Image (cartoon, rainbow, N blue to C red; front, side, top):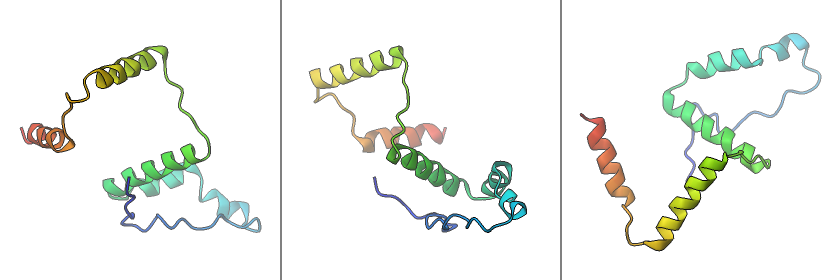
Length: 104
């Protein structure tokens, strides 16, 4: 999937703060402060940030746990797709239908 650049140019993340930064300066980067700042960004940039954070978690080896029920459902869907690969709906059709429903 092609990554897009954030409008606020967050893609080029700054380097971590050096250890010589005072605790007062470091406290400006606490989670509530960061979230307040992110809340001011356009929705598209916030979505891109979420995608970037998720990608970094995966790159660092994170694997989400899934329930037995979800695993069974995924196996069922994979089996159905393998049994009838010609019975698919194109992305263009899915997108068109979603946009049509959104306009109602």
